[in-house]
Image (cartoon, rainbow, N blue to C red):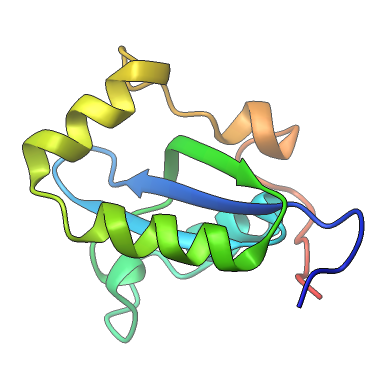
Length: 113
């Protein structure tokens, strides 16, 4: 179901050494990135276990179905193809957390709704 005005994102985060990639989907990118940061080191989540909280790529969608389909598509790709995608928009693999969240690391915890 589409909620007017809602933007959905697929995103790729990585660990500090850029060796592990995590791909997800959300309707609140800043809050989701903060959640990944808060989960760092927690083995019960993939992103937490591997310290994947550094945003390096994202795409925006109007419809959740399109975002989910894109997430599933990218998850099937090999590492080389994922890296090529990241490099189309972020060739230096700059961490985008501050750009998206306004401040990094976060002082205030943003809750998703």
